[in-house]
Image (cartoon, rainbow, N blue to C red):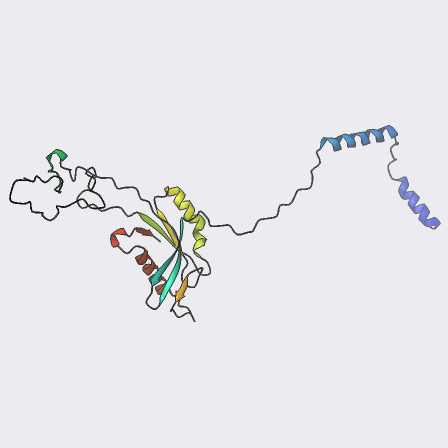
Length: 241
């Protein structure tokens, strides 16, 4: 360093404020305060990383039944995989005012061989009329059963029907079906099925190259499936699609 540089640095340093006096006692106090503060604050341990569980969930318990329904199609047939929870509707309230039940005391006893009065010494034997005979194996009808009001029909209940989208399967609605069953107390039913070309549904005698997935064909499959499962019109539940 040259003399010129030394003189320049000295001139600059002379303009700075004086350095405060150094005290070892102050330094010890600062160190003690640092130690106390470090012990007061709990040390945070390393957070244990939990691996996310991406394993598929089981659909067990979401439906009561897993069925294979053989359905005849316009060309060939299909074996549809159906996941189903039957509906259990509450019995419809019966109105006794609209159809009063006659008093049992006024009703004649039912005709049968057990209550026929036969005169043993009479030369004529009783003649059996239609409707008179021995009790059947099914047993006599319950006399205490109250008939439904005139014109009333049993309530078939309500059924939710789920049709999945392309690339999915009926089990896409597993959690939805379980929640509907829970909220309704099992009163309504749920049905989901694998449509053609998806899941475990199999086709026989149907052209698959290419497979017709038009809306008309899928609608016809649904109608054929429901007609197979509920062949009687009066037993067809109200459908929610």
